[in-house]
Image 1 (cartoon, rainbow, N blue to C red):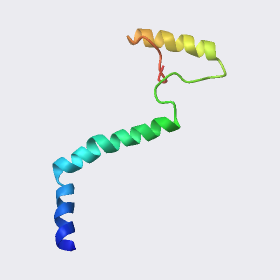
Image 2: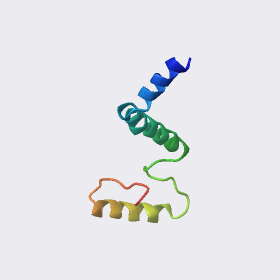
Image 3: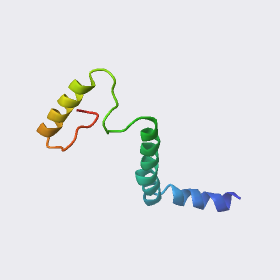
Length: 73
């Protein structure tokens, strides 16, 4: 069985195959799982100081050249 599995594993871990798997698929899957648990970079739903924070976020996003605020603002 080793004679059949070893070439397959070698091919899997070659540069092109591993970078395709880890470079796009794995990082995309991790991002998808992470944004399910949190809101991502969209606007946060707040209960305290909502109006003041939204106003400051809008001003910050306009200064940065964005149309709408995000979590960083």
